[in-house]
Image (cartoon, rainbow, N blue to C red; front, side):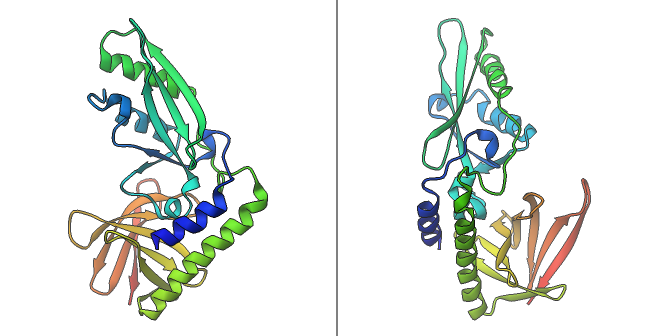
Length: 251
């Protein structure tokens, strides 16, 4: 399935590019930066914190959300390069698109002698230049292809949904039908059968039958938890800033 999705969308999106990092909702951050393999100086954590404050969603390379798997061009990838000179800690934060083209570069420097403090200060100066996340439905500038991309997305998900129906993985909740489809590494998605839209992606947690869940919503995706309980799938949905409620999908 992953190969099919990648092939379809790499063809459909190969010519489409965003103009600025702010056009992207997702930022993929590697576990290690090549220039800081021996010592991270807390740059990975610092970059994630700075981006979250600007409302970007951080993506781990080992756990890609389904919408990014379907459309890799929804995400930009961040990297930090060491550009230090004598008596000055300097670095460059670079963002690239799905075709590895550089879309934004920000530099920062510090005269702080301590490496950790110096690089963190330089990172702060660099990230102060990054705009707040302002992504649209798709980070593209050529709107004439948007309809085709969305139609392809629906087609792929419909194929998955139809296959799932054949396997009788049908769940019901509030009078609506839902289906599931496996992706990889024991991950699966929950699909609204009526409109063939993925509404949640499940990632296995350390404890059996408990999952990390990405809820896919028009108001913005968010992370929550889910459970498998016999023939039931249970998701904890956000109902407010600090309130949650559970919804059960039953076979």
